[in-house]
Amino acid sequence: MNRHFLRFKDLSPAEISPLLYRAIELKSGAESRALDGKSVALLFEKPSLRTKLSFWLGAEKLGAKPVYFSPEEVGLGKREPVPDVAKVIASMADMAVVRTFAQATLDEFGENSEVPVINALTDGEHPCQALADVMTMLEVRGYLDGVRVAFIGDGNNVAASLAYAVAGLGGDIVVASPNGYELPYGLRTDVGSYTLELTKMGSVIQMRDPIEATRHADFVYTDVWTSMGQETETAQRLKDFQGYQVNPELMEYAKPQARFMHDMPAHPGEEVSENMLSHPSSIVYQQAENRMWAQMALMEQIVAS
Image 1 (spheres, rainbow, N blue to C red):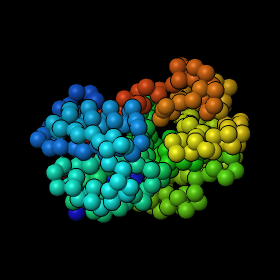
Image 2: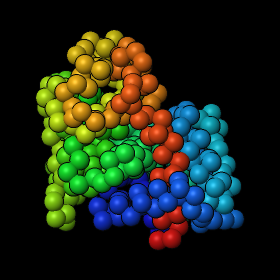
Image 3: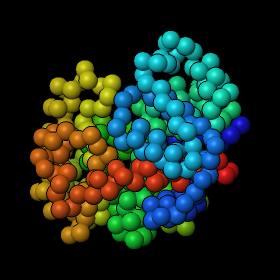
């Protein structure tokens, strides 16, 4: 069975930093044809700008031919059973990049694939986003020892993968969420187990108060209050997340040189104030670009393993 990247912890803590430095090398002009002559199937059940663009162009830069399948073309588990789709793709393509709803769907896909499978987003995790996030932090800060990240909002898939990434590098992530929207307790304890091999263990702290979470932070991160598939909850979420907006006033509680991050797309007026993406502290576009470089380093490492 080839190596899959279905969850962030499919990388060991020791593998994170070398992968990030390789991504920075690729961004700086290092050439790689690690996927020369190979094909990468992009199977998306959810639409995307950054994920499709970054995987498509990244695969091409590595020498591969990307083949894209839209939500209407496949219908995982609906139009065709997941194992059948996985086996057909594995019989012709060399790698599968899957963006779907349930983590269980991706797990089933991986169990039935003889070629590497990469998680391009599920409701459980968004591990490639987290790679790009910590790559961006490394570029900006120069080192990640002792980094403190405040995540303000829903303890969702983005927060989950980011928790593994930050703690796996020996940093601390403080998540501020309303009651009922916290990172699952089981995930928080699992992150602790994930970092046991580190000399300096990272930590995940869950709290209510966004101001307290932001104090002394090197990076302040947020995500949308309502993700794809949660549209029926929008009205309730807008009510529950009042007071959890990242704005210039909240940034004042972070360190003077703290940077603002968002995985995008953003909803100005909700989780961020108007013009927050263009605030002097914002590094969201650098973060978006780094999706491609981090994923290139990941794909390169997978085919070499």
